[in-house]
Image: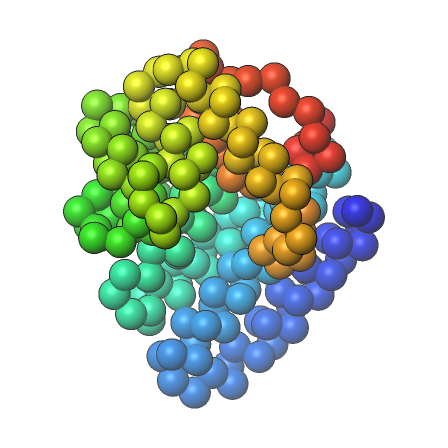
Length: 218
């Protein structure tokens, strides 16, 4: 993938979205447009991450977080994609202090008590970010066997919480393979962002696995 071209595309999408934002006539239209802006900013951040330009990437991930938070204000209940996107963006930027703030926000919104797997995913990520592994374990276990959630992602979260290094190795390699064998990516950006986030959480526990892939930054 030509990352410079991808970066320019995402920047262009963001600028176009900003120009269209005043045209959003109601809360529903506004939250959808803000989410698109968050996705475009996150896409630019990923392209910069792949280019090795981490400081610039952090700036774009910060833009993504601010847009996701704005969007959440107008979104219907259970819109967990925004808190997840915000938390992942902070982790991808390597800003753990800010990531902990996003984690506390997600938990305050009830992620750990959510009925849906996506909500529980948000809660598990938040608890692991805050180092509350004992609380994260049952939540991760509750989603890893569901048919409507990727089992290998659930396994990776559960094994991180349990500090099961061997189990985590198998799980994260499976998650990476799922990225490498798919045909479509969010925003058409071929980056295994979930793997990067999992590896960052694992690294804080001394469990990160040596992985090599065109979908991961050097």
